[in-house]
Length: 311
Length: 280
Image (cartoon, rainbow over all chains, first blue to last red; front, side, top):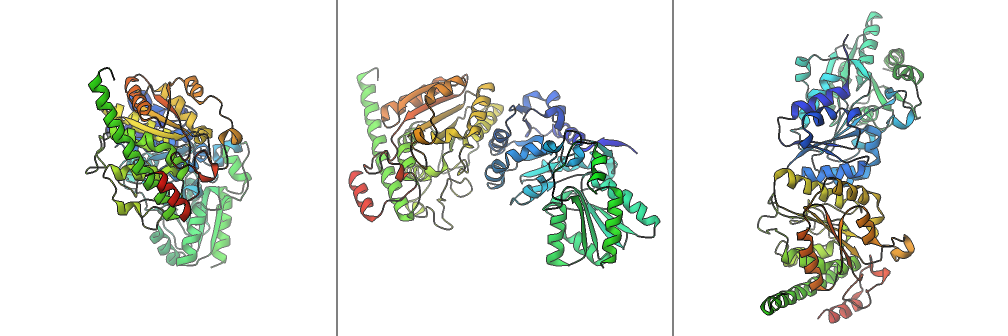
């Protein structure tokens, strides 16, 4: 099993996008961490560093975008939130295609502790009209979806993760991914597990274990939180009849919230949400914290078993 | 004004600018009265600068408002939208009828300036502190393009209390943007009261200077001085330039002048008549 971090997929995508002369990278000091430095090293003349000043970064990006450029602006997920109102009023409201990347999302970020572990970014950006919200699961899917953003005429927020996780897609499989379309990784009729980010590989492991106990699970990589692939969810409601969501994010308002909203309005089905249960994180190893917060593989398995009983 | 002819020419154009400013002031007061809401004070303090900028310098074309190579004007204190709409009307971007839609549902003239609703508006404002960053972005883009277009930004003085302004001020000097020009409308009043009471800012020009900007101060209602300030901005090409314009909130309408109550309040019917008499 190959391991790689999704933030490295972002950095790799920026370099691949360099052939588009309109692509420009904007940083607020953390390029080494978000991996925008990969682009800066090769194309310093198309990289704008703004110091530790996220609010400024958002609006400078908006100004660049209205002048014909395609800005990719990154910092830690949590620090994009410092500029939330700038994103809301200066980018989303006038529908300016600025592509924001927040790295180090979720408690899996680990030892840095709770100040660096954004657990609400997907929820807040999802609430903004016009925004596309992505949370890819591995290196190759992050690279592919970031490349697609360059030709997306909407503002976007992409969350990447700090730590290395299993590579799920080879390049060929990743090339078939599409923004707005959930990717079915396994098919089974007993339960649908909808996951995003670092939790996708956990969901796959959970499904494998369930399968050995005779429970067949569909696992979906819902890399696009908004626009949500409601069509896929509705069809899974028919096929599986119950759901588990798995995300490294608060259970409020993120993937679990989005799926719950869709199910409630369109095809009411039992749902269990795996995620951060309305509390902040702490320091620790990423996987250790997932276990501590009842977000590990065993917890996904238990949630699947519970939800099947509720059908 | 080195020659007699030059002086005459300038005098006559200054006279035209003053006449345009008066028309704008009438429209500002009428718009706010009609809407029974809005921000007359900061519009009236800013309008002389807008008239001078649009009439003497800004390269914009009402028949092609989205020309990529136009100069940009970014009104960061977006509540002064009546000032922007009134000058856009004088420049041919907006009709008289458009002005009647100020703050009206579906209207071209939204409560705060909005690039999605109004031709000729380059920035969607309404939340203070963001315009300088946006202007820095458009200025950097012009440099990347090798274009000579210039980005002008207007900030309120109360707005300088927003930290983001200083993030942008620092970055503009770091990036040596010579195509970014800023007006600070130093009218000394903000929403609740005089700036001096809300948050003392001491010597505003000195603050900009401390950040490394080229700074010029002028009387923001002396049209000659404003035109000269714009000419001074032209001479600064190695970094950003700011004009701190000392103004009077509500300038031109006696009962609004220097009166915090007219930051964000409309005149009643009687006050409208008085104001129109004063702006004859």
